[in-house]
Length: 77
Ligand SMILES: [Zn+2]
Image (cartoon, rainbow, N blue to C red; front, side, top):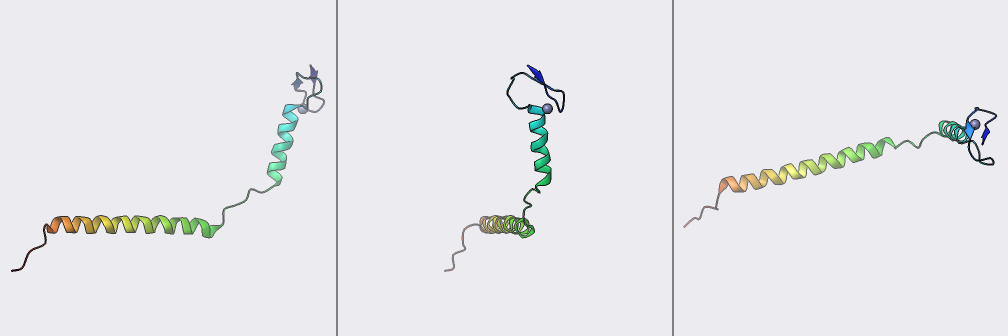
């Protein structure tokens, strides 16, 4: 057991790196590297696709309802 020189945290394994310092270094590196942002067009395309699916579903539902409400096709003759 030893005490970290940098953050005074207790390290249970003698030769292990300080977990607190390691975590801090990792966080600092993550802060430096910008997260890959999702392109704007991808977001728009996703919403367009969702809108299209909703429109198609609504159209199918409307056609089904229309056919049901019309009942059997009237027979002429
Ligand atoms: Zn440390």
